[in-house]
Image (cartoon, rainbow, N blue to C red):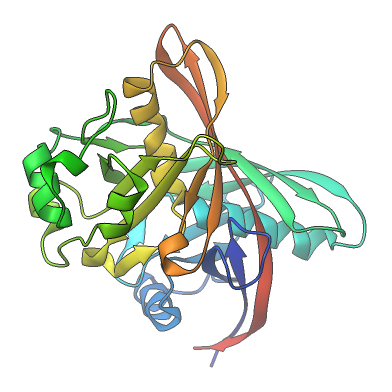
Length: 300
């Protein structure tokens, strides 16, 4: 019998029992793919991340990310949560400290910055390892409305129309005309991929003018074991492509935070920064805080 240490974190929040829960399993080098998938199914969180020895000794760790039903090459909330877990494990929380570490993910190396502060939740950010780009034909407004249980006039606002984008994981990006439509959305639990072209569907609406964030969002992926996700960093990374295409941003860096998970009772604030050069997406960063909720031993 093998004993492995693990910790759970709530990510994209500074408050326990909000944000997106994550399981971090340490010392997972000897686990097979099947064992990691089984453990992820046992935790039954949107993602579980497994920490292994890095191939490059200068990097912090090699990691594998699993949903309850499949492995992902990249995901945002596991990246943020794992970077924070490793920084806290290695440096503690007694003194303020800024750390840079690299996680080896299936998509490639991901450079993370972590800011430790004993007075508040730990903060991390990372540069997206792959810029968002179109991932297939744009879904029709009619198809989006039918798949989400909405009216066609609920779909789209301003220049925004449904599209598929990926920064490592493909998402059907569906703009909604109001936060009311966002609340009313009831996605089909059967065949979102057949209707919209992706198993992961990201819905978003522009936030109220006086809000401290730019967009409200929800994410559904029932076909991969995620009925609804409280916070989806990989979707935010893909969303950068939508912003570059539809938002008419001037050149430079732009901060456009996303509030997700409200409808689940787990509000999550995802920091998103996008860089535009010559009218095109040139860079993106994802940021957020995380708090440890539990730790223990896993026997397998």
